[in-house]
Amino acid sequence: MFKDEFELLLRARYPLIYIPTLEEERVEEAIAQCAKTQGNRAIYIWDFVEGYQGNPTDAGAGRRNPLQALEQVEKLNAAAPAIFILRDFHRFLDDVSVSRKLRNLARLLKSQPKNIVILSPQIAIPEELSEVLTVLEFPLPDRSEIRSEIDRLLAATGRSLESRILDDMVRSCQGLSMERIRRVLARAIATHGELRSEDVELILEEKRQTIRQTQILEFYPTTEQISDIGGLDNLKEWLLRRGGAFSERARQYGLPHPRGLLLVGIQGTGKSLTAKAISHHWHLPLLRLDVGRLFAGLVGESESRTRQMIQLAEALAPCVLWIDEIDKAFGGVDSKGDGGTTSRVFGTFITWLAEKNSPVFVVATANNIQALPPEMLRKGRFDEIFFVGLPSQSEREEIFTVHLSRLRPHNLKNYDLQRLAYETPDFSGAEIEQALIEAMHLGFSQNRDFTTDDILEAASQIVPLARTAQEQIQLLQNWAAAGKARMASRGNSLTRRIQEI
Image 1 (spheres, rainbow, N blue to C red):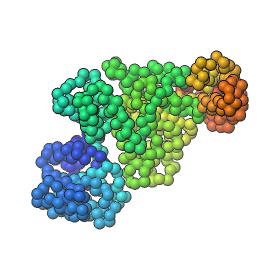
Image 2 (cartoon, helix red, strand yellow):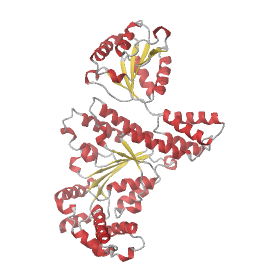
Image 3 (cartoon, rainbow, N blue to C red):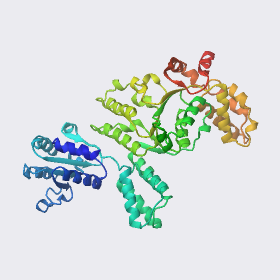
Image 4 (spheres, rainbow, N blue to C red):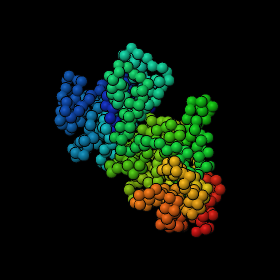
């Protein structure tokens, strides 16, 4: 909890505390509460435009001069307990005089009951200050804070909400800053004079906007259903069995929240489609993580972005967190020459995977199992690891049926599905889809509908990945056959396919 950690740093006389947050007002309120419990410490707030505020003696001191703002700390009686809050001070840390002054103050304040708190919307710490600054995360509002804010607004309007609608509204607000929550609720009240159940969609749109602005997570809309996945019967059965695992009834039964899945296999076999279908079937928001966006150039920024991603995902829970091609992000983690940044980000991430109690269902996909660190595959990180191989003949028939039912729902009987499945050995789902697109181009160019023969003609021009990457597929199959993963499909069609190549 933020207040407990902050009070501990005050008692331990940590001189320089860095709090990355966009919620200045809320964090300043929290600091003020902590100051009262810690001997009623005085609080001095500085910003570049107004200088110091709130104290008549020093009003305006240090205006437009960050170095003077730091010198003001020394002028205060050495025995007087105080907290100095410096807003947006990260912009001045690269200045040599400011940096040197902070390091001098770090020595001085170890023996005085004073603390300097730097508030910043982001982590931006020069290397020379990394040892003297302590970063403290400020969490987004929890359910109780959100509930109190909604209750306050309801009291102001003289209205009330059903308990179920109120719970939905609180849950939909999770993951937003208090400022955004107040803004979107004020907009709803201004629209029709009260809060209504349909305002949940307004809140969700605000949430999508927030996630887009983080540039770390992407709010991914889904329409795919479990029935859109051809084959993979074992995997679909596993997912359907856990469809109600996020409900309150499951908690009362004693079931823990499902942790997640690692889907390993050949490219184009439906791993990403499965992630989307899980989100749609379970009626949970889908967040897509581009791991590359976690990495940044400044000291500590990559680790901070990782913690921000975790914080945001947990605040939005229950949700599905989709990490595509995780092997490319963390492959060869020990050999990357980046000063250990990748190792620290990876360590933070897998520790969270193992210890998280929040209902964030992680779906990670990987094509190259050899590149993944062994720690990722250890039991406890995911509920299950599934191997997604090439579809068997019957599964290919299902895949053709799914696509043609969407493309030509009224003419499905005109296509020889059994022949198509038989004539496309070694094809993945993505390659089947590409053959259908090529067949459509062929028919369209001749002003007619495409036929079974057009599909087979298009398929004959495609060299499937199973032939161009035979060695990689054999390694994947051997790994799965050694009991390292469960088969997503019934039977062992991949072994037969490789033997036929």
